[in-house]
Image (cartoon, rainbow, N blue to C red):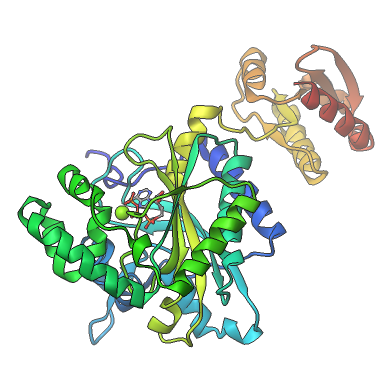
Length: 430
Ligand code: ATP
Ligand code: MG
């Protein structure tokens, strides 16, 4: 029988690369915690209707990318694997009355998302996002704060060559005016637009600006700019966001073709791109969505957020450095029945005392075990053979200097502090 393979567009994050993921999560968690963001963990599948309303039926995501199926309920019920995080977070916000706490909710999440797309580098069917949502503030400082935090996370991870594209999509009134102007401009080109864009001309014309088709992009390049259609409130908000970003030392490029084409997206829209990624250059996308909470049945509540695509982020990190490795203190080598059983006990004691310890289980010759010890990255090796077992000792061998000493097993833990210092010293020197 043949072996079973993972589905296209999914992949295993293997032990030798998981260090990148853990590092990203640790740094993000630290930066977000310092800014008083709290983690939320909503379910991975939801009622299909949540995404239809929360993302919009006229979008690609809802129109053709969702993993949607009936579960086993009677009468039939349509459920969907979440294609993004915001809709679920906002549902949780409403359902659990998080607004009752008053003030501003600062929330972050991370986890897998599902979209039926054509798999390619940086584009998968199961991919991962890290996202934030600030719910309950219309203040332009909230827009600036979330952008600053995204920038901080990416910079702390060591990324450079990043570009921030910034736009305002105004409020629904501004957009009504703009939409008319856009449709007037695009209609004469209708036959030259890609098929999806032709459809969008009536349903959701602003999404045409986001088309990946080359000819459509050429046409869109000369389209009227939304920035010329902003009313005075929208203009003021946008001016403030730009000023705050400048005050924070964050540079940006205005991109009037950057859109979130739905009614409940408002004001600020932004993307962070990397010069070091190929076609899939956008690492982070976000913006303000003052209409969404209400659209999903809550009270009118302003909000702003973003999502980072973790696969794309990690593609960038892989170009920069080796994956961080788990530090190992001791590698335990043993041979012979009594020695092997003592080694297991010793390894457990050391682990309980806070050391990272790998136990060689192979039972192979000492020489082979020593080779594995060298490759393991451990600082020191603990060796037990028949003689050590007999005398209840262990041979401690520092792998770099090759120095060794015999220690009574009973004394090893008493020396724990000493050993910890020595190990830290050697690790720092590396
Ligand atoms: P794109 O234009 O690349 O399809 P998008 O507008 O659909 O992106 P968002 O919904 O804004 O993307 O999601 C935020 C981020 O999540 C993207 O900037 C990207 O980094 C990542 N992302 C989106 N879809 C995928 C996918 N299929 N595979 C991997 N990462 C993805
Ligand atoms: Mg997409």
